Length: 141
Image (cartoon, rainbow, N blue to C red):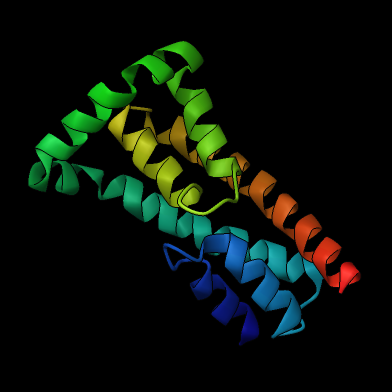
């Protein structure tokens, strides 16, 4: 049951896996592999849902998507849209992460299969970073 809670906590947009992993390890006392796996999977499901809902959101807010494309075009052109999606998905910092990676993948037109691979790989990296940081903080305390 705690695994399922961890999965759903990772689906909360602001919390994502950077909050789900420490909660799973400290509150639910899950083993590392379960905390990591269920957090990454929950966050990945959220990312896929957001990516797939992109068309509906683009219809509702076309000017927001166009503004975002124009504002960040130079960075995307310099680094490549796939690199941007991976890096945004792999950074477990506030206001950047899986959700931002999914939005960037949609906004900049990354094909679904490539986006899923980039976002999933980025989440795995982010999860490892969060596990290491969590254990570093626990050991300091």
